[in-house]
Image (cartoon, rainbow, N blue to C red; front, side, top):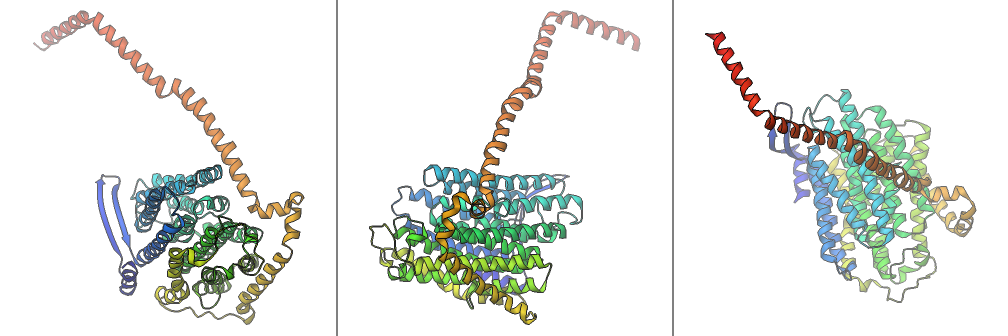
Length: 553
């Protein structure tokens, strides 16, 4: 229904506003505004399609969980919070959905009750609180106008530029760009259906979607800084994924890389193309996580890809779906990822900004092919070293396979369909032959690099204990260490000192507590004075009245 509505709105050029006014004063108007255009309906249709398939997938994946009903309620709240963010035009209601995403994601990350999950959930929650605080600052700066970000004020005003900075800060925390990248791989402590929903169409895409909505208010300087942040995020995620052995973390780092690609093309001024890649990426990333979950579920919860060789003989259907989504991630013609990724690379070549940006971007694309090829090689062709006593087959997870097959059709055809729906006129980009072949060249180089990393994998893994550069590359440029050290020792420790010494100390004596004690003391003194000198008080009043009466006469 939402998909058909988006096609109707894009063909007719219609936008629908629903404004519910709650309070109106001379300075501001507090109203709840719902805004529906073709982007809103199209994105909502993708979120609902993917979440419905994941709910069906979870029935079998989480069948042994005694709190399964609570898990489903949390997933429904998660999807509802995303719907509020997508359809809201008011920053207050956006904050409600934004905070809902953060709160429910924390509850889902710590769903498995262990120390690792609690640490990951705390890192996720505290990292996202930075973005929540930035949104609160934006709301406070918009209080003199309207909290609706469309038509708030002149985009060239200094106030709105500061608001735009806070919006960018909120978006890059939710989309895990540098320097807030460490929480995304840590959130893999959540169950795999949660990871599939989070990384495809809900939590991490909320930041990109908010930037697409606020795109017209961003200055060129902000876009320049955002471009370099997203480029380094792409490169860092690609390098780390090539040296990682945890299946879910490899796919999480690929999500980080694709988010960097979306924000890179958004920074270059093409928000429609960023939205296009956002939708196609949601499809094949959800399928990739669902296939990874089926493998982990069948192998007795092992996530190390070195144990997963030759699974094509045991799980042919799941592995075929996984290979299809992996090829869509690489941009193989003519799957859904090809239509957006190839177009992004050609638009980047057309909007040539600098040699550094160009080379880092294409090198990151090559790294995407490299870790995808490495992942496929380990799962398809390496020897099987699994320690599971379960029967590893597709027949043991019928509902999960059915949900995966429901997405395969869209992974294949939806890129072509969306390229006709979204763009009013088709892109026809003419480039020199070398620039046209640059994409193919880096894809081939990436596949060669992935093969070489496989061959030298043991050589690379042995000297990690005494090779600091390898640790630096593997551990996301030390961002997890810096985040946990900074959050635990600096911010939380400083907050504890502030609470004890200042809030409960000096402010209690000279702030609200001191003022309240002073008021109580004054009131008791006045009460005693009034009781002791009540007769004198009335006598003076009578004398004054007699004097005033005689003066008037």
